[in-house]
Length: 188
Length: 156
Image 1 (tube, each protein chain N blue to C red):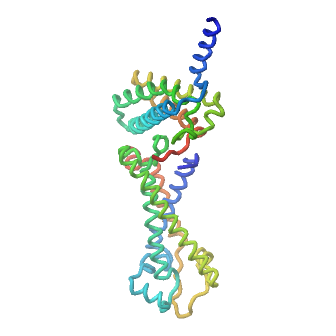
Image 2: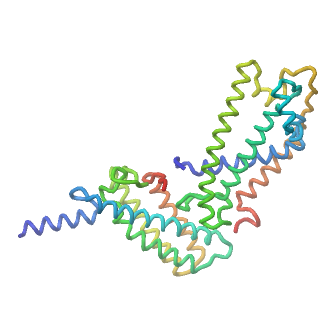
């Protein structure tokens, strides 16, 4: 790592862990368009979308694949991060003590490698948002508010419940705190 | 003769302070950089094992004691690892040029580390768990204090 703000690095990783845990649960109990089952589609749906024969709301079948790729790469990055340590052994993820230094050294390399993959995906992701924006379809505000122009032929979105979101966030926060504490019964 | 003695004494004291008179020959510089790299790597690897034991609910004392002794010994040698002419302009190193731009501050940080390593080693020998933990934390802080200013990431 090049900067000296390693503590910031670790805490932002924990924040991302919390968000990922939330998103995982929200994909089962959240709004209809947030659910994994609504946008993880087979190759046939992707082909239909590419041929312009897709009618729907939320992530497109192709966008859904990108969501899954992003989610998996982020989980990989955070999963490696909690076991990572620097080469001086001065900074370590909360679970690094469970592994041998030889193993964390490999994890260190994988954490860096996966970051490069993640950067590529981020460029693609932001590129797609800009592409749609230029073509007159804003995506960011509809993602946040749940409101946007839709095809009248498409089904309506069922919004999620705020208290369900709160419960998911509470659980995600609790699991993250548990990891920060050093997991199992708090440490090795 | 007298002048020679004075000059020799001056040379010795400057060498002891880690100040090179003339430019260090390249092969000598490289050898010191190699020793420095291996020494620092050994300190880092030892620290990884120490951190695991100290964080453990049942720390294994022999590992802590041998680790503390290793770092205390290497910390003394570290005084000779940073003569002028062993910076990034000479070869691949994680040592920043600032080391030789602010020699007084660097030397003070080096002394802090050496003192903390000796204290930690003494605590490890005595075997008192809470003193070990406190002095380990204090020592690690001296590592970070110096690395934050004077160490670059080094790929190898």
